Amino acid sequence: MAGRIYLSPPDLSGHELQYIQDAVASNWIAPFGPQLDTFTHTLKQITGSAYVEPVNSGTSAIHLALLALGISTGDLVFCPTFTFAASVFPVLYQHAIPVFIDSESDTWNMDPDLLEQAILDAIEQKLPVKAIVLVHIYGFPAQLDRITAIAQKYNLYLIEDAAESLGTTYKDRQTGTFGDIGVLSFNGNKIVTGGNGGAVLTNDPLLLEKVSKLANQAKENKPYYEHAEIGYNYRMCNINAAIALGQLEQLSEKIEKKKKIRDWYSTHLKGFAEVKTTIQGIDNAWLTCIELPASVTPDHIISCLEKENIESRRLWNPMHNQPVFKQYQAYRNGCADSIFSSGLCLPSGTRLIEEDIIHITDIMKRSL
Image (cartoon, rainbow, N blue to C red; front, side):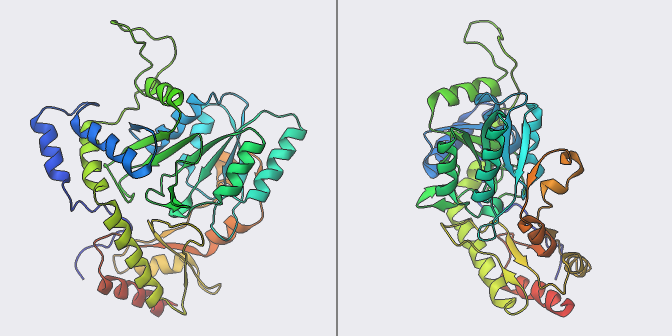
């Protein structure tokens, strides 16, 4: 088999090149242009969100969400521990305080019982509880009914990090549209990529106005440059939007192929490893994740696959294990640590065929 098999490479098989050429030919390479406008409109249609603000990364989108909601120094923000650090870093940009919440085993997402306990403890201590950052990890929808109810009960803002879950639905509604603000990522490894990029979703026109202003250097609406607050250069470039537009047009086909890949893994790993699927809603199968038997370590499988020029990766190392977050409180039940110790992400690119999956799983079974 020729060439390296990557974990989640871009698949530029649509109109991406045509849209890039159109943007260059028309000289629209700045953070404005027709491709960006079409991308924004298409994203609204797909997500069902009333307002969309494309930005330059998912991290920027989270930061803008926190800024728009007024999260600032000393505010408590409840975050999942089983996630990527970019979900939490913007909390520290605002000098707010993350409180980490462990996972539940059904969806691998934030445990609602631990979340409510953490909120109650903070309220009892008269601490400023302000927001929840809810991540739909690996595209699996979280327990949205319970968590949205908790947010409403305690009057907390809900930010949905749907960076990994574009195309995932819960009760026929797209993830990222249940909270006050949702965020998306179009990083190079995502199901839809623009090379980089992100987006803010909201149904609140005032929040959209705030986000848009802050993302565009907080310029006042005057015929000259005036700034009454600190702004940020978080805009999405029209070239990135051109790529992402070509990708977005293929979203349903990409999800269908991702699910087929996961089904192939399930078939060829039966009896050897457990392939994770959602138990609620419809996930996008962004990455095929597995849990290995106790007798085998993820690092052993990674090493065996790497020898055959195949990329695989450990699941997220929980935030409470990260040195940069060691001072912050974590409500733990052991679930995230257990998933991390036994879990693995397998190659899930949409150009894979079943013969590739057979090759990968044969190597794994020999190593097991």
